[in-house]
Each structure stands twice: as C-alpha cells, then as structure tokens.
Image (cartoon, rainbow, N blue to C red):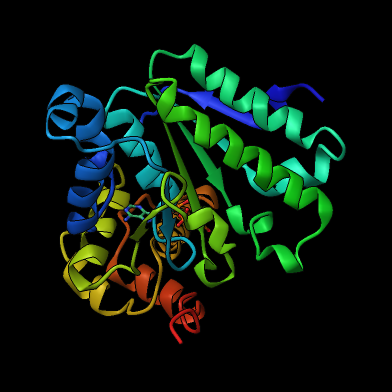
Length: 269
Ligand code: ATP
C-alpha cells in the first residue's frame, strides 16, 4: 500500500467562518495552536513552550475534524490527516514505519498539522491493547518527543469520542497534555450551523433558523448537515418528477426532523 492511500495531505479549505458556534473553542484553538505558530518569537520570549500535542474530544459529529482543519487553514499549515484505525488494520507489521513516514512527510512541509482521527482505536490503556497497537503508540510518542527539540513547525492533533479510554501515557507533558472539549451545539450554535448549511440553497422566506434550532435539541452538527440535505431532496425530487420548482419550506424540515432521531443521546453520562 502506498502511503497516499491512508494519509490525506491538503491545504485545507475550511476556515473558522465555516464552523457554526463554538466561539469559545475557536478562541482556545487560537491560543493553543495558531498563536504559537504565528507569534513564535513572543512565545519563546516569555518562555512558553509551544508544540505540545492537543487532544480534541467530544460527542461524534460535532466538528472535531472541521476544527482541526480550520486550525491548519488559519495558520497556513498543511493538514495531514490520518484515520488511525486504518493504520492498524491495513499496515499490520509496517505500522511503526508508516507512523515515521507520516512525521517525515510532515517535516518536509514548511508548516504542518498532523491529525490522528479516532486515536482511541490504538491508544487505549496499554494493558487492554494488542501488541500492534502498543507499537503504533510507542512510535507515535517517540516521534512526538522528537518534535520540539528539532524546532519543527509541526503540531500534532488527535481526536476521540472516547476520552475515557485513552492511555494515560499519552497525556504526559510534551505529548497530548492539552485537552480541548468540542461540545454538542447549543441553540445559538445550531442556528449558526443551519445558516451555514443553507446559505447556498433556495429557502422560503418563512424558514426561521432559530425555530429549526429549537426543533433540534441533541442533534449534532453532522445531523443538521444531513437534515439540510434531506430537506432539499424533497422539492428536488418533486421537480425531478415534473412538479413545479419551489423553494425549501419549513414543512420540508419538519418532515425530515420528525423522522430522524438525534444522535447525541447517551454521550454524556
Ligand atoms: P466524528 O467524531 O464522527 O469523527 P467530528 O466531531 O470529527 O465527528 P466533523 O467530521 O468535524 O465531526 O463534522 C461532520 C460534519 O458535520 C461536517 O463535515 C459538517 O458538515 C457538519 N458539522 C459538524 N459540526 C459543525 C459545525 N459546528 N458547523 C458547521 N458544520 C458542522
């Protein structure tokens, strides 16, 4: 397998304005990720160590990946994303070598953010994990330990829906010592996500995003994105069947929301 099958390297096209809500998180990300890159000298002057790994956690579909991408865009970094589960399933025997390859690829960029999605697929407590997973984590930690001393413009982010299952060894200083919580969207955030998801679609004047937000308590950002797609499908389908071309109405949203359960129900214990 070539590394291109599993590593996605891109200049991201998602920025903070594309993310609805999460204003506090954006500010936290600016301080933790963007300013240390863009104001390196100031940080050094005040003796603040930059470059520690950051673990984004929270319920599924609420913007962890988007936030990591947007962080890369905001600081002009290349975004190297790795679906961690695919490393272990596809790279059996060669996992450590490929972790090294990911970091080597990143070091070739002038500035890069590496993003390990689904980190819990390897980084569970060591007593419970398989040998290959331990080797992957060990190599990841070794590479991360080397990052700061080398003076690389490189930052490692990871995401998990299961922070409680993460190996505490990963949380030591210099590793993923900083945690950033990406919560489910509140009312305001849901309205902002509807605004973003609907901005390029024809909607009726009667459509009220605040009302839609009120109808979608416990729905994730990913749920809202798909509600908007499904609502648009209703008038689209009618038009395809020869009906009149009309805008998306409040009723279309109501129909879709009624049929669909919120995905964030049991995450918070
Ligand atoms: P998972 O834990 O399942 O990997 P995640 O937290 O990484 O999910 P994302 O992949 O960032 O979630 O979000 C999934 C999709 O949901 C996005 O591509 C986007 O369409 C939509 N979405 C989620 N949160 C937001 C948000 N705050 N603003 C706008 N769109 C959002």
